[in-house]
Image (spheres, rainbow, N blue to C red):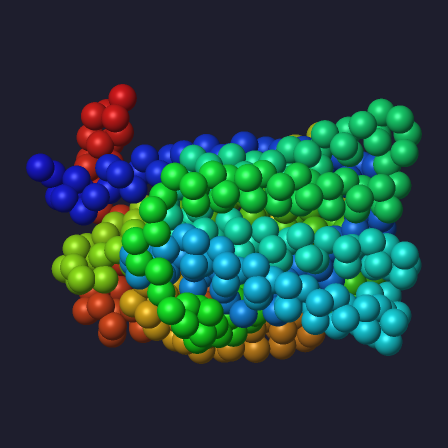
Length: 443
């Protein structure tokens, strides 16, 4: 048995391959959706659309209490059964939705003009209606992820962009691609997604016998989740501070151009996101086998980083013609920002893998500490650079923050695992040979 097979990489690669296939399909749908919305609404409308969606995504990020990663950890480690998690999820979602909807309404009524300039209140109210379904779906999806039911998980995750894109194409064909209707299409995608998830979970509960019902899981999930949650809040702020600040400091039109650069470069995260989806429950499962975990994480981290780097190099050469052909010449100013974002995107791919290893060690609070530093650097950099350099300044500040994120995680990961930094980030010839051999054996 090869070293990679001993680490369970064949199984991991299978799950990751399925997830990557879904991510690629979703990424393609999202890119087509981005092109359709950008062309239908123009730079200013595209900026308003992106900023309006910050409201429900911000509420879901701020108020989810880290329940999704807690579900993945406890289910992945076999410490709780799906029925117990489902009951806890329903109780928590009901409370959070009521509270969060009130917070969102207050934001619109009191701070709407200041926080979302040039975005009509009707658009913000429409965007707010997405929040309950986005939050609940994140909880439901984590159950499938924790159970490592990745085929069903991926099918469900494919639903929202597919339904949204289908409706938007219909709107465009009828000449009704207005911002309000596009938000309604986005909401419809989540409605269908939640319905399919509930059907899948109920079928799962009928076929699986409860084996480890856990008293007090509600409290345990919140206890674990809160430590992961603060990190997730800061990560969300880190990922979206540039868009928010561009809209506040300059205009929706500039934001709409910048969003195109972000949407394109974030497609390079498809591999790291796919691996992250499957690696957290896998690493949680290896909590009693530290030696195997110490070998697995570096192999994944350095492979993901190198593949993402190669994709970034390719994107530098095709960015200009791609944006010009698909988005139009009015978005060509996104190219310099896109190039400036690429170093941070590569760093972010590796950092995401290390973050999952740290969370699987039941130390999610460490990710929070990293995020606090990175968010501070990112926000300060954006505030300083945007007035002088516009969207390029936002890209430079954000990219630098992502690189700081990787450096911090590498240093701390070295201390808690004992692995050398170069072992975690620099690919070796054996990695390439082993992975090629495994892929051939799968074929």
